[in-house]
Length: 491
Image (cartoon, rainbow, N blue to C red; front, side, top):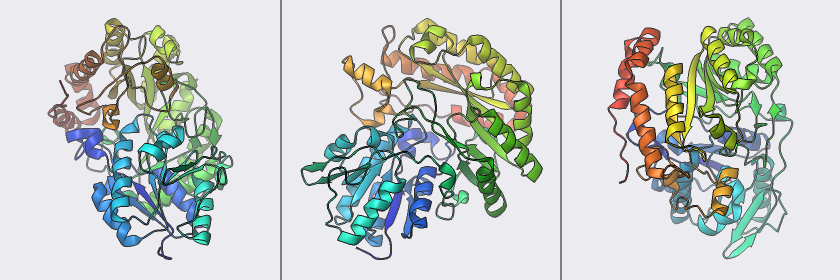
């Protein structure tokens, strides 16, 4: 093993698998912030660290394997995702990357971390080829594992529960562990290692830059809070933590990172990675006041829950601070459908939040899911009709998937429902996408409805006229280029 590099963090490439023909021009290239935070934490403790973002470089697994063989790191950590509930398609790329590394550099141990590895560490060791799995947040477990590998050499063996969070495989021998403790004092985390993943390598979502399509890069993402206190049954964002949780950065911490990104790296387009940015409105208001006072020219987008937006004044202040987009998880129009997945948002509250947000001059991303367990043809049509009535600046239409690690996955698996056997089948745009069937609608009908809904929404003259009036002809033409890509579906 090389004394020069202790840890290589790899973010695998699944762009084409996840986005198909939309990958080259349309899809965002998002920075793997979890890898950047882990790299900064490990480096701060004296280890030599590098990040290889194969997704941004569009490197296939074989090319990653060759790089690992050349670098000879003490340990490779392949990350899936902590942020997006739906990015289970990253697992296919992760598994292929692990196998390519083993083929090209057989002496280098590989660790898997992320949502699915945390949920099913034994599965990852037995079937997906990992030498180690991190169950839970990787900061301290990786440091302790590196210390052991550095002290005892590549042949070192981890004992059962010796390092909380680290599961291991030695041939056919599996070594179990327990979930790593949560890192509670998050202001003590170092900032993301942006020097190892420069923002110039990344590109914002197209809709995020409808008013500046020629300036989608550089792009960055930051947390103001971590975790989520809610427990929606279809969502996997709390799997790494082991359940609902919520930890906040101070406004001072966030401002330090925003200033660095803006002044040193020239970043204005920023995603606030929080699962719900608007939970602590006192912290939101203080952060907005600081951004306004500092005169930073920023273009944020963030997630919010409609019930967390409790007055129009905070929205106006957010807009002044640069929050130009809010994404609301509306999910479904029918209250019965929302209640069945533990998201019983009041319809009046939804209407009020949309109205206030528009009045504040903040553009809206509406997220809708077709095929939730209580969905039928009528309720799915109600959701599409709601989206068209709101006429938001961007709408995401998803098929309901039982993602591994979620309560919904466990429920339907226990009920004997057939689940995807191929990681790619969890991809929203995959040819073999396999959403959940409901009691009323088949999986193929759900996929067909979703694809029809997308076209019906974005070909609607009312939407296109609003888009051009708001953002100009370039935005309307960009949507036209998206519509020119026909999704290829099996069957």
